Length: 206
Figure 1 (cartoon, rainbow, N blue to C red):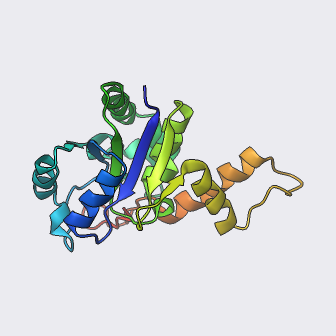
Figure 2: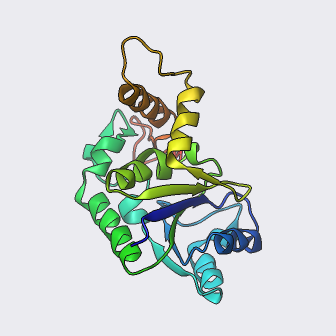
C-alpha cells in the first residue's frame, strides 16, 4: 500500500492551476478538511463547484470537514473559547475521519487533504491532522503554492526555526522542542470564539 498522503491549500489559485498541481502529483482523490466548504472570495472552491470541476478530471471528492475540520461542535474541546487540538484529536468524530482516510488510501487512491491556507504551517492540516497520520505510519507530503513538495519533517524543521527553537537547548529534548513549537503555532492559528458573545459572534482563524 502506498503510504503517501498529500495536503494542499487552494489559496487563490484558478481552478485550472489547482487541478494542474493535483495532476502533476498523481492525486486521484481530494479530502476537503475545511469546516465550512465555501469561499467568499474564491467561489471556484465552493463545495458543489469544486466537486464538479474535480469530477470532470476523474478526481474523487469527499467532504471531511465535519470530522477533521479545525472547528468543533464539541464544547469539551475548548478552553477559554479556543479549540484544543489534542482534545479534538481524541474525539470519536475525528478518529472516524482518520479511518475514512485510511480506507481511501487502502482502496488505492492517492489522496490530498485540502484546506484554504497556502502555507502548510498556517493550517490545522499540518499542525493537527498530519501529526496524527504520521503516527499511523503515513508519509505526509505538502504541496506548496508553487507546486513543489515539502515533507512533514521539513515543515517541522521550518516550524522550529520560526520560533527560534534549536537542538542545542540544554533543557529540552528534540521531541520536546518540537512539541513546544506545535503548541505555540496552535495558539496562533486555532479556531477561537468570543466567549462573552458566543452565539452572536465568532472569530474563525480557519
